[in-house]
Length: 244
Image 1 (cartoon, rainbow, N blue to C red):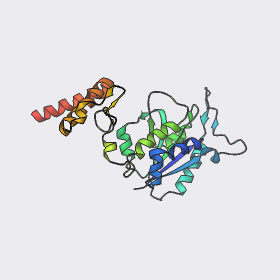
Image 2 (cartoon, rainbow, N blue to C red; image 1 turned 135 degrees about the vertical axis):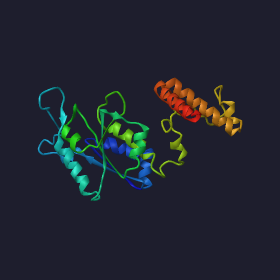
Image 3 (cartoon, rainbow, N blue to C red; image 1 turned 45 degrees about the horizontal axis):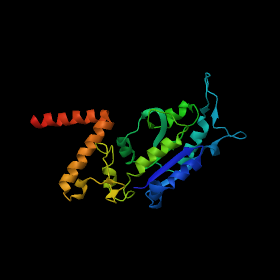
Image 4 (cartoon, rainbow, N blue to C red; image 1 turned 180 degrees about the horizontal axis):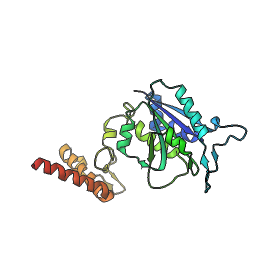
């Protein structure tokens, strides 16, 4: 499956610099993903080429106008398959939290469209009639939608088959299961008096696996009490079902 990604933004260089680099760039080079970046200003009206205007009803801040976004969307539609069913993603602080489960679900689709917002907000008609998914990357606000869109995109692209070197690289990540990832070590064995745990050098694969699992449990318990509580509830339910 080849994933097509369209990104509507007023700042194409910001997006292009990222999708041409590292894992995202590798995915494009392997022809697993194709990126299409649309400059929102190219869909504005002369002579001022504005993408924002004052809000109806008053209030502070400017609102992104609907016309440029709808026109960019129409251009994408013209080059897509007749039976296309894209996921149209709008990163926003008031969206649902973006999780690894959401990334896995989006990774099963063939066409993703990102709309990058700016200013105080975007005309609600865009959200009502174009957007299918609204995601928040955390309880904070950033300047524009490009960085959140790229974070979401990165999480999705790395799950595409053939992008990472091994499937285990994704399967063992934090949030791919109930537990966070644990500590990792590589050569040299000793550096500035800091040493690698002996268990990792023992060659006892079963004991190493147990050690890693325990470190993941420690990490989750100490850093994410919410996830730990959820895991404990799941394990308790499984134990009750087993004991019948």
